[in-house]
Amino acid sequence: MDKRRNIIWTIVALACAALALSGVADTTSDDYADEAFKRGLVTFAVARALNGVISVAQGTEVAVEPGGVGVNFTVGQILDPINDLVEQFSSVMLVATSSLGLQNILLNMTGWWGVTAALGLAALFLIVATWWPGGATAATRTLAVRVFLVAAFLRFALPVLIIGTHIVFSAFLEEEHDAATAVLEATSSEIEEFNEDQAAPGTEEDGTLFGRLGEMIDSSVASLDVSGRIDRLKESASSASEQIVKLIVIFIMQTIILPLAFLWLFVEGLKGIAGRATRMKD
Image (cartoon, rainbow, N blue to C red; front, side, top):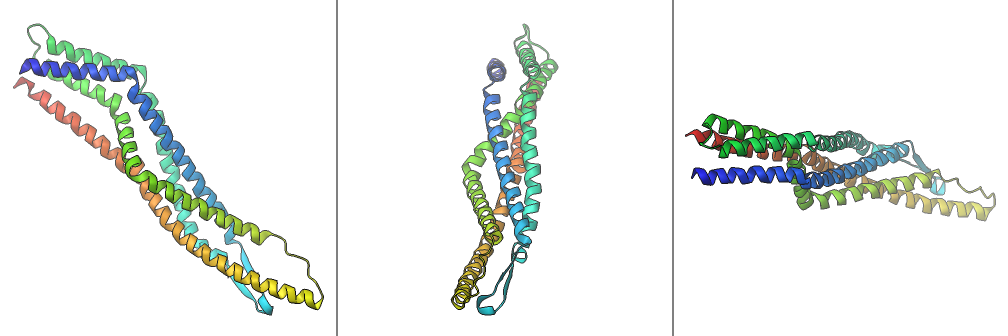
C-alpha cells in the first residue's frame, strides 16, 4: 500500500513539474485571458458608443407640421431610461474589463520562472521525502506534501480558473453574449442614423401655390415617417435594455462568479489531498 502511494505521489510531483516547465497551461490560459480581455474591450466600446449617440439624441426635439398642425416628438423622453441603464452598464464593463486585464498581469507573475523553480524544488522535496532510504518521518512527509500543494496552488490556481471559466463561457454564454452585443450595435447605429437625419439641413421654401402644396405633402409624409421611426426607437430601446441586463449578468458570471467557483473547487481539491497526506502517519 505504501509503495503504491509513493508511486502515485511521485507521478503527481513529476507531472506537475513537467506541466509547469512545458508552459502548456500558461500558453492556453494566456490565450483565453487575452481573448476575454479583448471581448470585454469591444463590449465596453459598444456601451460607450451607445451612450454617446443617446446623449446626442436626448437633446433632439422633432417638430413636424403636416397641414399646419404642429406635432412634436421629444426623443430624450424615450431614451432617458435606457441612457441611465447604459451608464451603469458602462461602469460594470469598466470594472469587468479591468478585472480581465488584471488576470493577464497575474498570469505573467504565476508563470515567472521563480514560481516554476519553487514548484520544482517542492516536487523534489516531496520525491526525496517519499523515497528516503529507511523512510522519512511522517511529519517530514506531511510537510513535503503541504509545501508541494502550496507551490502547486500558486503556480496553477489562476490558469485553472481561467481555463475553467473559458470552457463554461464557450459552452453556455458565448452565443448569448454575441447576440446581445449585436443588438446593442444595431440600436446604436439606428439612433446615430436618426440623429444624422434630424441634423440634415432642410430644403428652401417655394412661395408658389404648387410649392406650398408640395411642402405640405412632404411634411405629412415626413411626419408619418418620423412617427414610425419613433415607434421603432421605442422598440429598439426596450430590446436593448433587455440585452444590457443580460450582458451585465454574463460579465458578472465571467469575472466574479465562475472564477470564484473554480478557485473554490481547486482549493477544496488541494485541501482534500492535504487531508489524506496528514493521515499518512496513521
